[in-house]
Length: 428
Image (cartoon, rainbow, N blue to C red; front, side, top):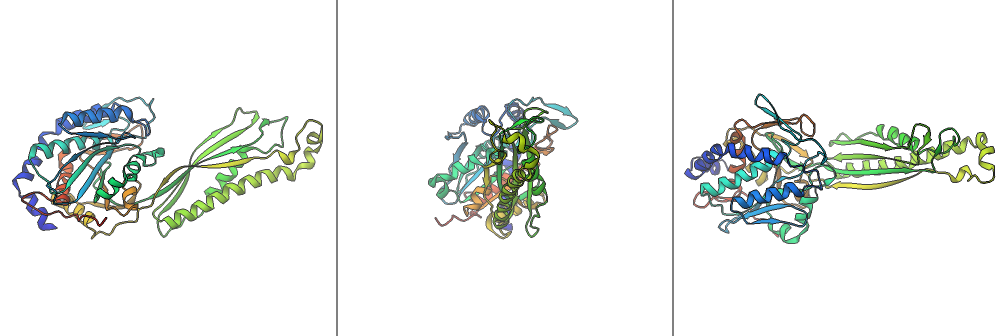
């Protein structure tokens, strides 16, 4: 593998490609700035997807925009190698009404979504140009583009949709998600279950109907119990309540309220165990809330025994658990597996020491869970503050880091007249 990259790095075609990449930096940054100003909240990516497709077509590509707005093109090889799918996600975490304006401070540029994953979306366009203009000819086929639905409640629906088609699942031998600006290599997929829990009750006046079971009290009980749950420590497992909402006014017993719950783990067994515990907690919280007021029924028997009043025993809080997300766990791939070893060697070939990040929650979860070799890695430039209003990106010397991604493609796919593919064709 080391010999493969030595051959590539000393070849005229790769040297030419890296020179083109360096010269292309102003164009990369120009397209980056255009794309970041197009809002693309998960499941609302249509406008940015359309513009990205136009940009690919402007480079002479034949472009596919599928039913959910995934955008990609195919760069055909000689037919003597595997098929690799490289993609960056089109969506961001920011709602459609988020103000988008680029602000510069020194070499840093600030704007919501400017790093994750708009930077890599622009750099996909750069890679397409570099491959075209350098004259490099891969032995394998490259599917390259942008996908939707990676963030939040998008629940990986873009990549999930792509691989739900048998012809795609059978065709792809390796997958690279191009996400963030770090020097990390993600080799496994952190699974997650996400829920909305709706608590409902009769509601009423906070004074006149005192004694009525209260959905907000039930939710509070559930949150308190949930916060005390013990997470397994053998493989990282987490839980959180991220959003709570509901109620009518300060002097009302709420009719309804809800909370959003996130649970994650590197282990499916741990995730399933945590999930079962969470569901039992919700059931317990509702039962305790209803029982608490029935226990004091003597205090309120006069009110609820009068004609026209529904008995207190029939005035109950209920809870409904609605699943919003299910990201499958992708077990960590060994460092000597071809796609991981080739990624590490590609980093080092361009003078970058990789940070082996193990598991993360990315588009790679889907192919890894299907047994398709996959990794996640960052691109060119530097960034920080992802998912915050202070998100920033430094475009200085973008090509210094982006070069590893091009070199990795050369290694995995093989280059005509130079090297054989490092990634084997999967047995279908």
